[in-house]
Image (cartoon, rainbow over all chains, first blue to last red; front, side, top):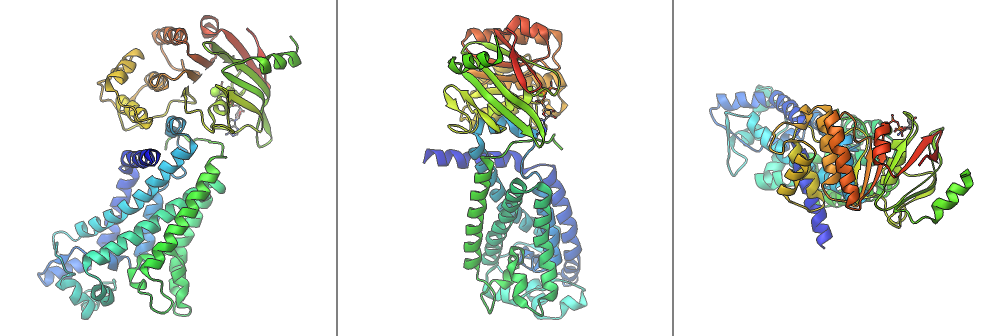
Length: 284
Length: 225
Ligand SMILES: Nc1ncnc2c1ncn2[C@@H]1O[C@H](COP(=O)(O)OP(=O)(O)OP(=O)(O)O)[C@@H](O)[C@H]1O
Ligand SMILES: [Mg+2]
């Protein structure tokens, strides 16, 4: 038991030491830029209606496949230190041993996934400044955008799904999004880790990118076969498709799948990490 | 002594670090080709050899970073790759020193020290002073000179007071005074009963420090002293 506590504490400590870095800053800047492009028309609409937007726009941003694509690309950039073969790891590996070191990194990847989702919620609110307001409901502006033709008039490209607003309170909606999104990002990180160990780092990046591109390709043909898009975990970050209608999965089912896949990836990583030769790169 | 005889002797010795018939290739290049060494407790064992002769590869294998193709490595009676997969009970310097470059030397030491659940600022301050660094300096390691980084690497290797030290060219980039200080430090550590494996290009290190000397060449080691 005390070993497990040590492991978790060590993982959290390592995560805290490493989470804030240059890659995070670049990620934040890029996200703010892309969010600005998407949210600027909404801000204009809110200003003209002289009514602030609520802070809960992220579920609707995530409905957009291109926004998701840029988000995932940013996350992959953030994860680009995977598989952690930087020479500053040497003194850490020798003190932890292979397994504990890898477990620490895995815990770090998972924590990062959830923190990046939280950060994304925060950024989407920041970008709406100054016409943004913290409130318990979805707010007048979002309802108006969902129920009237204001989106068209103001060239707002987002789809404000009434289904989401009707089924969830903002806290529930954002909670589901952070939970599912956190797992999906963890999956991407661990997938990159496993593929880098078994094949190569380049292959890991290409394969992870494929998930993101696949999501776009599938969306473009999904008027023919609707369920294809839903294979890619990245599409699950659109919580609008998680109501279990027709071919759609449910939130519970998606989380169960993610937990299973993450456990399998963790197992594969630990098996391989016991056998590899460590070859370090210089720090970037 | 003939080759075969050396190996016989090593197998029977009860060295705290023993390498037996070690072979290691990268793709088609064989770097270690039947390497045998034995280092007794409380000795300083020197390894010399040309650039690219395989000293670092051998040390990495002893630490557990590389897996041998054939042969075995025994440390304190435990077999690497079988009983343990990483030598977590040794202080090491391998390759160029590399730390978290945005943090101070002291912060780096504290972070590494904490991994084995230890916390003792005073002790770390003393270690910093011992290697000639200022413990209260806020300078980021990224802005350290090469010699300062090397001193910090020595500090991290000795701070846990491990019984075994594996030091790959620990004097790299040190000034004359630093070299002198570190030699005295290593002799002190030896007096405390620690075992040191030392790779170096400096003949004075060999003559002044080492109880035993191996030369590695063409993937094979020869005992010189
Ligand atoms: N990960 C690796 N992949 C391929 N070849 C490697 C790898 N690591 C080391 N080598 C090769 O093994 C040989 C021995 O390298 P090593 O670093 O052990 O030399 P060395 O004796 O430490 O040299 P130096 O005195 O310059 O430190 C070199 O030819 C090197 O290119
Ligand atoms: Mg070397």
